[in-house]
Image (cartoon, rainbow, N blue to C red):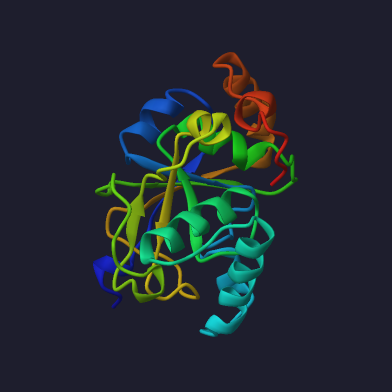
Length: 207
């Protein structure tokens, strides 16, 4: 029998009635996925198998292109945060403090698939860690220090895990699974609260 730690509480959603209350009651950080089969694995973790070579090479190329110098661990974190924001493959996962933002990113691509929202109750670090992100010993959630309109409006939170090729599993993890027919209703709900492409991606970034 699997341990409780490795179980995910899955809830099927068939209507938008009391949806925000249900989600808010399930966590303080949220992640939207356009495909309900997606797991909580960073993009780079789906491409490499415990190989840091590609990750560090991508990060070095990004820092050079952006003319950013890395001389200490906090600067490594800052470059990682910025790289994630611009769609570079990193070991970070995007989350948000706002369930509406998670819902929007789950439906904006309008796939004809079941989509999902992950919810977790977790402590959030307000300060950038002093240790190297490549030596993380547990899953942690961090509020990025740098801000722009997009980061601020998205109410961004980033997670990092020890093994970025293995999905995050937590006894507090809840996964809401939605039928494709609800996409239009969800988009309308988000629009009613002013959550849309222009608001969340004011600098024109495309994810």
